[in-house]
Amino acid sequence: MTDEELYEKARLYGRNALLWRQKFIGLLPEVERRRLYEKKGFGSVFEFAFKLAGLSEQQVRTALNLEKRFLDKPVLKALLENGEVSVNKLVRIQSIATSQNEEELAEAVQALPQSAIETLVRDEKSLGMNGPRKPLFELKSLRAQDLKLSEEVTEKLLELQGKGINVNEVLLELLKRREEEIAEEKEAISEGLPIARSRHVPVRVQRVVWKEHGTKCSIQTCHRLAEQLHHTQTFALSKRHDPHYLAPLCEDHHAIAHAINVKVQERRQQSIH
Image (cartoon, rainbow, N blue to C red; front, side, top):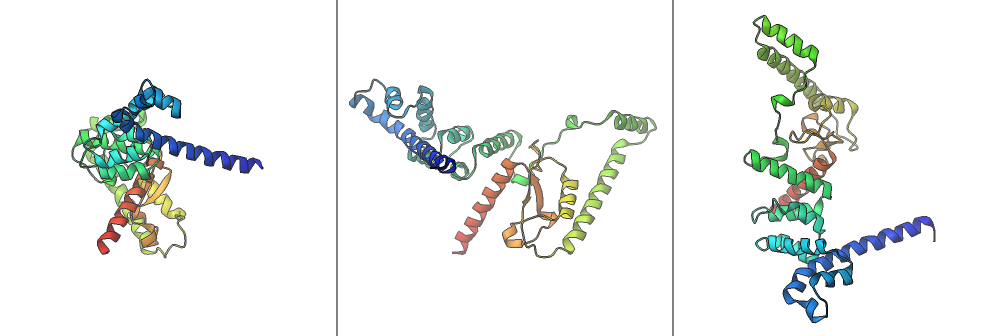
């Protein structure tokens, strides 16, 4: 057996071990209800879980508490009991789960990695504090105190203000001119775009997108560096790298955006049929 074969076998067994542990954890609420552990000679459900599957007391308590939290959320409760997703993911979403959003969250925990789930929960909590829910690309959170103006810029603005010049108007005019220049550049690129042969975004398109959005994730409640250019207009359908429909995203928001796209496409197909 080669090192690679040994590694692949270890990965396979490890993956299966995790799956069966999830399924075992899903049985614990029913084991507790029936007091099956007593019938089989165990002192408690904790001893039952430890001796049969090596679970800690905290892991058992987490599973039992989740089942209680999901009593009025049958879709999420079924995910727990069937062992379809890890308890760690379900723990992350319990604080934002409601009977109204449980189906959406169930799709998310099955489709997204754990780090993206944590980002989704953070977004949802932020939205809950700041008003009604908005689409992913409309989130905004920019405060004046977040601006980090250099000493030189600050001095120049103060100098202008000392001359009786309205610095707000000066800045707004500069920002408006910048937006117009970017809009013109995007329009010029968009008009001459051919049908794309690959998903690779041309350099000149990348440049104008980064110029517009900067280096951070374009979800404005997120402060991570952008790692991917996301096609907000599904590339498989448009076959174009139109800068009007590109947004730089961090890894987690990119995963969330693709999960949303898949869900939208599935619903569209269902409505056709």
